[in-house]
Length: 331
Image (cartoon, helix red, strand yellow):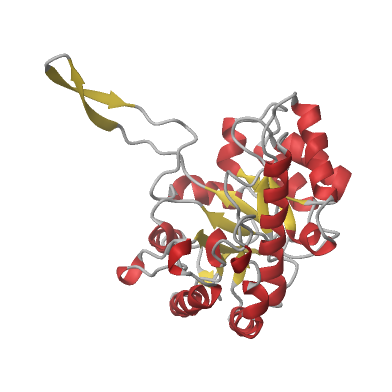
């Protein structure tokens, strides 16, 4: 009888280190103070040391690692990657030696499919910078730049066409780094899978987004398998995003005439919780396709503290961490 092998899953977190009193992630000074990538890389080395001490082997870099490097009106910041080539290579060597997977995820203002030409140009410039940073570090194909499809103006089909047109304007190295993620409002997994078919871009499946917006009604196991399949040709260990929905009720005091009232605000399903629900996460791991390894970026407000707490809770259930990865035995 054939038995499926165990699977392994590195867990990661994004940008901020909260443990040990906290660590700054990058040079956040305003342009007038002349921030620079060289200062950010010093902070990155501190974070890489922290990750190694805690056996965390996955981390999302801050998008602003090279401050203002893609700003169209600040050319004085545009050459930071070249100016820090040696330091970037050193940081990449440390990450590779320690088996730490790095990635980045430009935010809501990087819209590759915008109807506005200036916004599209800014998105292309930003994606080129992110790809250049990962290339200068000498990182492999699993070091990716994650992006949402963007806006849905003009209808879904037109918006997807604009994304493809924007993708085709990227350099080959930026295209190779770019992966696309389903969102919680406009573009579900079925849409990003269609983009994968048209462009060859890999898909990062966001579990909570899928639960919020799944127009195709695709079961979770099928959705996960379809997203993982997009990584087979380009290489690199697939990754997914996982978060638990916020469940706590917020109290707000508001003025009503001369009185002050307390109002209770219920959280939206798409809001991220501080921690990861260990019961739901264990079920997710055990329900994943047998023997298929993939990495999991935890999008929890408590960052590394949420990861460490989750890992401890999973260990109590028999899912131990080996070399920074949760091992899920075959059923």
